[in-house]
Image 1 (cartoon, helix red, strand yellow):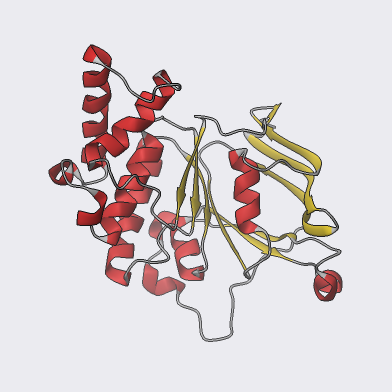
Image 2: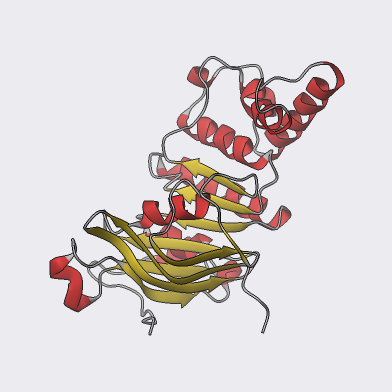
Length: 264
């Protein structure tokens, strides 16, 4: 069997006596698109922070290409948050180029001469990829919410990450704009061979985008004592024939859910 690209082996995260996550056991292969749903406070964002490297698991192992993820961010892993993480004093083009500048000049965060021109040229390529080429000289406050999120995606991808982490990136967008963003993220995922982990509160969105759906929750016998017991991945659903699914096929009657496979 092929070794896992990312593996969680009995991972847990505690803050003092408060247990957020525990008994996380899962493996993910390169190129999967994992969508994650669950009630507020069940540790989905904490899980992303562990993958990003800004939080360290308290128990167990978290492996990336067979090696432990160190407690610091890496160019291998990019992130896009719901709140637009852009620099308001920089132009769209400079916001994107900054990722390359910090990568090559971490102390100054600035390149000069030929290297600066190369960084700007690469920024232009990513702005073209996310549909912002015509707005490259604008500033973030001049952009709509959807355009700002496209900018945040370009910021993340200019470092050529292998893993893209999305924390409710489309939650604040209008339905029509969200549809456009869905098409964009699927296009970028395929073209760049990304492995994506995405938190969403929208089950329809989770099914439409993902190749695999995880549900984070507390096991039933522990749900009433959630401070002492952490949430975990209670369901793991492979989504087959995702490319053939249409949004209209993913609408469930009120108070009903798709049949999910419980994790042993």
